Image 1 (tube, helix red, strand yellow):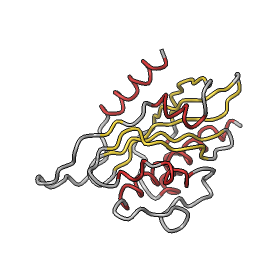
Image 2: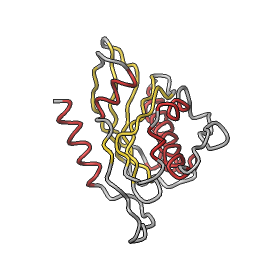
Image 3: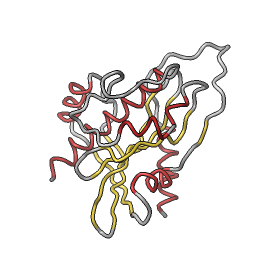
Length: 192
């Protein structure tokens, strides 16, 4: 059942309109999309095996959207998000959120796992669609995000080491991690 719901969620995400983005020149070969992990596989890599998830649809208020837009210096286009709460032995140990952020021309689909204290537990790239910048998939790069919170800048040359030739993809992953951290803390942090 969880796999079916995850598949429906992924299908739902791709049906949503994405942010306006510069279109690639017609002579640019974008290459095939690389499907790397399913959300369930990514959750197991981040949180370990023997975890259960519960899908939660969160609706954020206009006030939270405005606050996030100010904190993140970007618009927050949606008011509804899908979050998977992660449980181990009946205790909530964190949250997992799948998000799309643009690389140069196409979205990078990633899953960001955050522990119960709103620190990044791990980041995994689920689908990579660009013909360059795929180094952001590497564990060595993604490990930089571990233990980051909303207090961290999550910026190139501040706390994230850039990858030469993949700067735009790195910025996309940074934006996704920042959005997830701020969104989860704003929504779930109120209830703790």
